[in-house]
Image 1: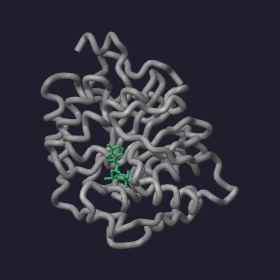
Image 2: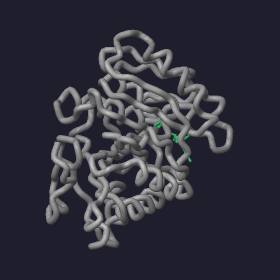
Image 3: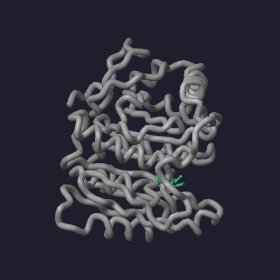
Image 4: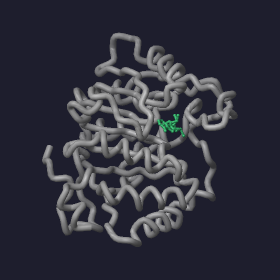
Length: 278
Ligand SMILES: C[S@@+](CC[C@H](N)C(=O)[O-])C[C@H]1O[C@@H](n2cnc3c(N)ncnc32)[C@H](O)[C@@H]1O
């Protein structure tokens, strides 16, 4: 794939970014663009008028989903959701949307995951990383240290048959901490995250980790829930200092897994010159 993340002067146009073959709408790099993007999302998608949790149930002990020719059964711990600070004990819609998007993009020839190094951040119950491994990627699923038990169980349950094309390992990674050397040497081809932008407090650490994990050839996919416009605007504002950000339109998602309450973005690291010229 070409190393050029985006062609300059094509801001506002739909272009290809990183290793994703689909065209995305690149966010302009100026002071207003974070607020504009957030207003546009809420205006276009009207998230508050549609039902949350279309593809998941937070009271069920497991989520069943067909993906990549497998019937995945992702265990959840609904009772842990009441513990302050615990969010990954159940699945969120944006995880289902991102996982099915990856499958659809690979099937459509827009994305190649086979043999690629992939790191998932804030994996929670692990659906997205499982799907990436089924699509042939060498995946490291990461989360906070006390969140890894359920994650490991889901990987063992769903990827134990000999017919997984890639591989999956689980590892602790706290945003803002220095990542282990094996995560960044070599840099991953892809970094994935679903519903990882949900509080202003976590944004700085999350971006710090994204900056540390990404090399010039790394492509990031983030899917998020449209719950809080202030948090999302804060994220865009901070992210655009280090990354070029492009919106993946719903027309490119898996047709059965679209939601007006979810948005998806591709990010690639800016080059030094691009940072200095901002
Ligand atoms: C809303 S959940 C999303 C889980 C999953 N990606 C999904 O879509 O279902 C956010 C995830 O980020 C993880 N997380 C939150 N803060 C973190 C931090 N500082 N370092 C690492 N992971 C964190 C949580 O443990 C949780 O698994």
